[in-house]
Image (cartoon, rainbow, N blue to C red):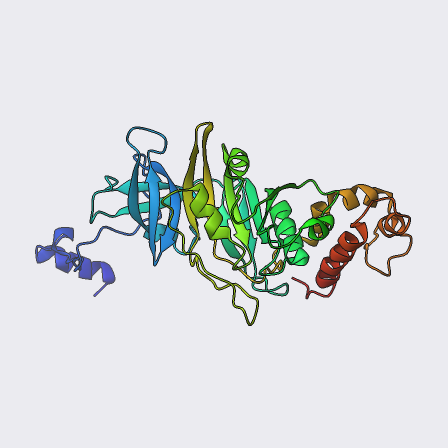
Length: 350
């Protein structure tokens, strides 16, 4: 019997396509698709803080409908980092009522991203804050002793992220910061000095209006004290310096964004946990020189390919410092620059 004959036999039995059984979908799910919902109804929100997988976000910023909402990350974002300062798209219950939960379904393009690594050889980035346009470096004149090379690292990270650096020297009633500040003479850096009983809140606050400013500093320098003074009700934990080690105790354990309000306007203060190190493993070494603006200007006279390291021949920066052309503190700044460049010269290739 032919194959065609078999088909004819089926016809004789009265069978057709309608008799073919199709395995049912036991879960009654729709077929998978790569198409994702557009979330056209999503609202834009500012991330104020992150706590154990939940995000405090501000919806309807600067409107009569402004409210704080708790949100979770949508599944489609996978492991995409969402950090304080991010502008995100949220859907779901955005009423802000107790017990409600919305979803973050997207992140708006970032204008800046401040990062650090565990050390200079670590390529894993620790994202600190997004969309900040200023960094306020808080350093104590004493107790604990100021660390100029830690400030250098902050400056490099700020310049690499395209963020304008500022500095506050606290506890100036304990020690004269003049010698420390000479290290940064010639840099484009606005500096505020503050005694424990006389904090220049109005001057510092004026620099915060209209900006998103991330506060960074060594533990125990008075960063959280300054934040509490600028933002009443912030209630950031404060600590003390260990009399034996001379180190500050970590107090603030999370990064939070707080609104600063003044008669002249508003701004955002981003308080970060105190750190004792600030790795730059993620930074492009070509950007380091930019943190030393006066040295970068002289570097234009250097031979092509000059490394600016101590053994670099005919380095115009070294010659200018030796000739006294760059004023007091230039030798210390050159030393700091060379230390950072040496660190990157010894760093494993990416």
